[in-house]
Length: 589
Image (cartoon, rainbow, N blue to C red; front, side, top):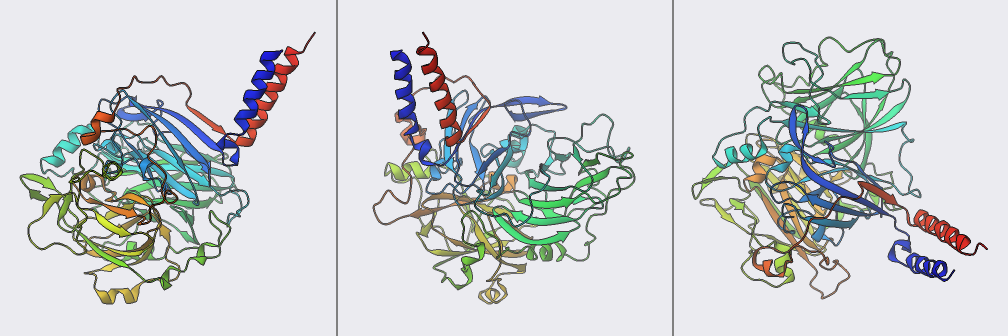
């Protein structure tokens, strides 16, 4: 009987652990490896492509154990997750050493003070072009009302251009100064197009089917996880009611179609209000291209009502007809506004943060251009500087007070003179309010993303930004998000409150321009010597570069489980029941 009481004592100590402070934990154990998803060779997670959905709620702790079964180093970045006080978990080369092939590493972070639809993906070596991505859904806590009735279902759609060539061949082509050219197609949830056209689409291709019931309403979470192609999303004969984008509830407007640029995420409510005489097309087609040449680069899935009377047939619903009106997509983007009456992750309303009345403390105009040759290599730049990640990550260098890893002299305006390769970092002012203007002098749409933060998209227009452009800013209900598009020959302005200590990646989401150097890091340091504004370096930190000597060799782990979500209260109850059972057995005569 003594052993049973010993186990009971163990349980008592367990309930005193941090888990039982109230915030639940979600545990994931992932094996990232090459798999065959006919007819493609892709990067999968636990044999899945796309990978599993991380479905959690505000304040939950997320623990993801990654086994790198690829043949090269790996990092996973959590696109849009803010990692409050914790850039150690960001999953990009500026803050983390990559996980060597055959090794494992565990990410641990809290989705604090945020809700919304996001995705994760491998951030190094052009690997996203081979897959490795999946969704992140952060739900409201029960005490925070959602600004619409609960949908009858929740559906995630991953859209993205796809090349059949190996991703290593794609990155080598970029390094040699070649453009990637037209993609081979657009995937929807990792599958090819429905055969809507016998000439354009060969037989035997697997396609995605979304099953729905008439009269029901569903939430569609749509992510563009592709390489460089902006996509127009639409569902035949159905309205898309936009309700959320990357952590902000939007004013609820209806669209017949919406442009989703690379790296962006949206949530729509879609009501099944058609007569189901047949199935309906779900379409994602390339934007800002010659439609006749790009006709085959179209993703097509099927919306199937449970009472459907036949297969979808006939032409696809038309894309926007804006060949002679280049402002269509921009006006559409401007129409996306913040829902000021909705609550967010916290009880206070979203609109309580009146960003338009805050004094700006730093201004950066970031100009990008088409690729250039620097020292014989093809590179992309911001303000004339092409970022080259150091072997020792920036954040790790700061921790160990290493000199010469980077410089804090990133220019506030484009440099004059020849472009150069560098490791220049933006020196952000802690608790300052920064204005960033993205000036796109490229011929293609670029999407920019900032890790660790949401920012307010306050303006965009064609031409060169000037000081007078501030008169056009939306200072009231500009949406807060983490990725924004910048149209060719145009600018986009954002405002961001630098309240999250760490070193954070600001990058092009377009994989080709990012890979060639179109990124910069923003360093935000609390001048006060305190541990309250940033979490300490994790005990399992990997070491590389000049700190390689601190790294111990590792034996790869074996995958035990693929997923577990444990509410502290539920775990406590299960443990209590197990202990009582053991005690009961031990005390039997």
